[in-house]
Length: 414
Image (cartoon, helix red, strand yellow):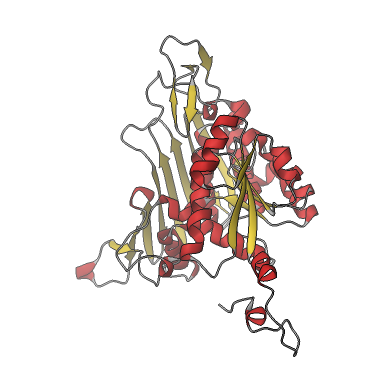
């Protein structure tokens, strides 16, 4: 890929006359100054991506970690020191008002996404927001409209798209090597809240999270379905909250929390598990399961696609592998084969290690940020963006309304 700064490096700028390189101008053109709101699970993942990206993807614009923001002064200062941010803020409005910020990264809880994103867009900042885009479809649509009105770049954090094995599955589907797609089945299984004494963290409160497993885990499945197969047309679902009260927490960190068994209890008003069936616009059938009540499953984010010419299977707990089957293989070697997606032929892997040397969860965020920074530099919208966030939220809401109405629900009805 040609370097967009070749003219400057050669001592000219679109004209015949050469002149000395302005190193400060070159540096500013190739830098994106980041302000991040949130500093826990996703904050650490995003910070790691910004720090490691320049080492492995030097052709991409350089993220400059200007400021991190959180309400707890002591904790956010500690995070700034630990993660490598230049400064910190305790009010997200102050961060947005700064003139040394180009991109606002939002990984705070879902209930504040809308206000932060709209304020940042109006301030002319590019946007990177974790999923789900917001707690309601109405808010998600407002965020998309405001970002488009402001003319800023916007990206949503569906990081699982960026695993090289998932990229390979997309390639096989797009090239028609699996033939006509008949089935997409997906499941995201976790077990971190199986204990009834696990505290009532914010992810279990509708006012903050919007929904439980459905919006947290199911959103990833829906995005993968749309990315790999296409738009969903109609859905029918069911959900359950198995543990309706939990002790109030003393502290929370990522997916862990501490609390006393004798602590007062609060109500769990989100789903512990949601399952739904779907029909895709092109006629393929889908099944989706998201639960946090599956003992032994730490992060089983998996899918299988069946087509007329073959199938693929993926499980994020073995994220470097794609199981592939083709119907035209010779009869004596029929069966799924394990493809280790670590060769330079696989997306992003040319930047990493020799073939066979695997990568991990954190690398999906680096690949995500590569797409975001390339899009900013190339003056295009990154993918996935807020439009994808809205499409996902439409499916999430259609499933919820299907459950309430106990019927099939068309996506166009939401």
